[in-house]
Image (tube, rainbow, N blue to C red; front, side):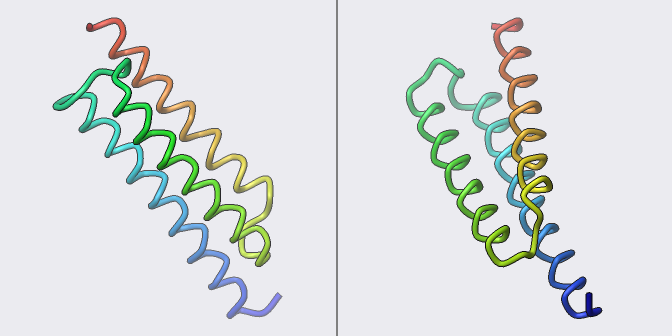
Length: 93
């Protein structure tokens, strides 16, 4: 694999990871300041953001910039972190 291709793969993964982190931060702020997880707005924001990220990952996989396993792992890790946040909000609420 050429050095340029490796660089593109690393950049693609970093961008996807940054988008996943941005979703996590957005949900944290929303949970802390705006609404609780039972709120339809929270659900809609989360669903929209997760769908968008999954489409980005699919696109990167189709371009062979990210492996299917890497993409799945990114989504699963984000979902795991969001579940932890959700559980913590349920306990404190």
